[in-house]
Image (tube, rainbow, N blue to C red; front, side, top):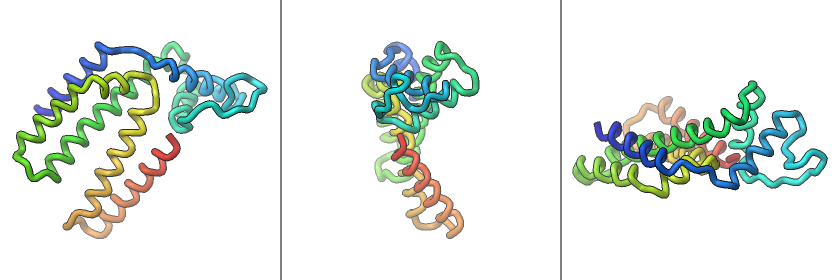
Length: 174
């Protein structure tokens, strides 16, 4: 129930602050040129790297390559950002429940406060790579803490360390 309320609050907040950061259009332009077969360039024929988010750009480009128009891709990138934000909220709550010594209601209260954070909602709906990057880091932390906790079997521990490593590698590409 706490997660449903928190995610509902977050989605409402994100929807009420719906905007696109102007820098996201840089990524959209690079992605469009990748999808057109011109490579990661801002202007065809000019080889300059002006993007800072390779993985996000390639994700956007892959949506164009499969045939989605940018009139769909741009709002879809906002939805992906909000989905990453919801994932962060879930992991935040689970981390608090698993690793905090505070009473269980503290995790619920902290999660609701986090979900109500306007700056978090604002950047999740921005069309930028920040929500994906943050989700990858938080998910990596989840797997790492799970792997280093006492109790998991060696095979599960190896799987969790591998998952954390892959997620950190992906975050480095973002």
